[in-house]
Length: 97
Image 1: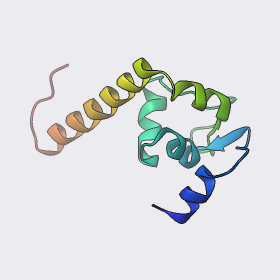
Image 2 (image 1 turned 90 degrees about the horizontal axis):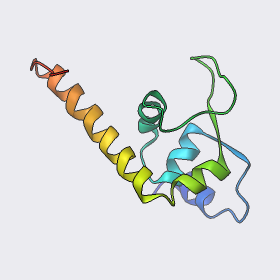
Image 3 (image 1 turned 180 degrees about the horizontal axis):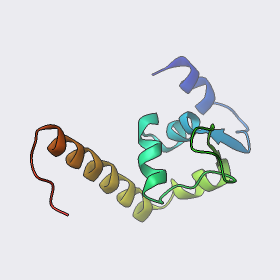
């Protein structure tokens, strides 16, 4: 495990807002999955950040969501569907709509 990740997860008091990478650590997913979840509407950044701006997420929301088994199911399904579609396109297969 990454030492920064381990150090962050062992904090007694988490910060009120976290970056995309830190949100991924809290959820137990890879940081590159956060844009997939935001595009799907399963995770919302704070404020209205520009497309190229750093996205911050509310820690309290992340902690509530990670306790919801239904939401975690949708997250897993969305990530799997994203990679399935991407791999089909990469291999030149037709992706059904």
